[in-house]
Length: 212
Ligand SMILES: NC(=O)c1ccc[n+]([C@@H]2O[C@H](COP(=O)([O-])OP(=O)(O)OC[C@H]3O[C@@H](n4cnc5c(N)ncnc54)[C@H](OP(=O)(O)O)[C@@H]3O)[C@@H](O)[C@H]2O)c1
Figure (spheres, rainbow, N blue to C red):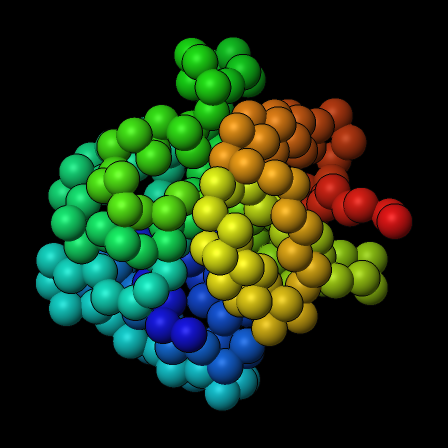
């Protein structure tokens, strides 16, 4: 699958690692000049797997699945900039919209994912996912010797199936939680996971798992 990741930070590195190991083609879209090239070179030399790594041409968002690996506060600007480029594509919102002063959600009504969908073309198919998986466990795709659970929410079943394929090919388990409105609960779980780090001292290694 051709995947594009907007962002070159911790989550971009972790997502790229999983997708490269899963045999996919990953393109990076950077913000600060040079950072995408730097990360692409690093991953080419460190990650084993059949996938290929590239940097997207300036002002383009290639690929059928696009990940927003940027702060929630940057999503409006990025959605506006790349609205046409992301039309018709699957857009995965991995963000946790958190006000770090209050440790509450920064979204007034609904979820960040629903707000992002409003800023995109109506033909973009938004899937919430990966917001409950911290970058460190995501890099290995495992926690406690078990595959990581990746919770997904979205209104388009085919889009969720595509993202689920990416998840499973990277050695993790996809859990479809229902329509995009479920992003409200996924964002609450993401916030809870962040908020409890200080109390439990788990250093951003904790994960949520469904035992069935
Ligand atoms: N870290 C985690 O464990 C984790 C877990 C689940 C979800 N998340 C979510 O994943 C997202 C990314 O987190 P992260 O930890 O990867 O953050 P990060 O390491 O700080 O990386 C953020 C990325 O966003 C880019 N960026 C910032 N402002 C931008 C703008 N206005 N336009 C375009 N790009 C911009 C940065 O580019 P420059 O560096 O060039 O400015 C950087 O590449 C966040 O929404 C976070 O809530 C994180």
